[in-house]
Length: 327
Image (cartoon, rainbow, N blue to C red; front, side, top):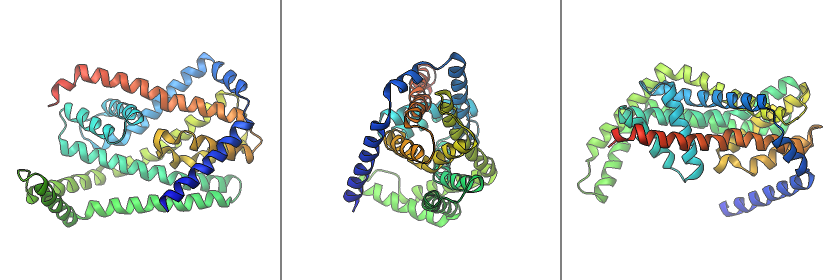
């Protein structure tokens, strides 16, 4: 079934890409990309900086002593590694950076886990916001409704699982003992089951305290993440000349929210997200695929290519100035 699903996905994406490529005037795309004005580039850089600030906010909230600036540094460095290398390279880098700043490993792991899980909750819940906004501003649209139902259910399951884990002290201890037994079979000299049970219990208790003290602010910041992502995307479309009156703006923004979970695919769903979005919006509005593709390319440069450049520079800076503290 999994193999069949992969084949079906390749066929659907291939069909969408062929349909898209036939309808795009690539000379107009190149013109739009090379004729951005200076003030537009400055505005995009500012928008990308705001986006990184909002994305890093939950991490700064959940890790005491980290601070917003270091959270942004950590976030953009991990984004660069995640783009260029397979997981969990980005997680290893995140933990190494945070520990090099003198933060306890348990605090670092707890804050990183909470911010990551809640970000996935927000990512899966985005179609619900898109569906409700479109319904309120225009009409009920069944495909948006189904997307909201499927991804919203996933967000709810993930959130309920997180809330259960934060209250399940016995389960944390049991998992720790099982892990300790498994590791002792592989490495007889490793820490015993009781020590691992204590570690996971401490991790669970620390995470629960974090959510109680910072959960509301983190939740609000995650709503800000989804709104900011949509605003940056709409800005990129507007700068390449996509005409956005009220009706088109509703289609453009809500369609992006509905397919936002696809950004969780490798390379932020490059190809799949772009083909799906351009094909759908051009079929349900007066906007042409050429201008949409130009906007999508500008968006990818702003939120995907630029962070890699900044992130690699950040890693180089960290290795020179901070990594000597990490052992």
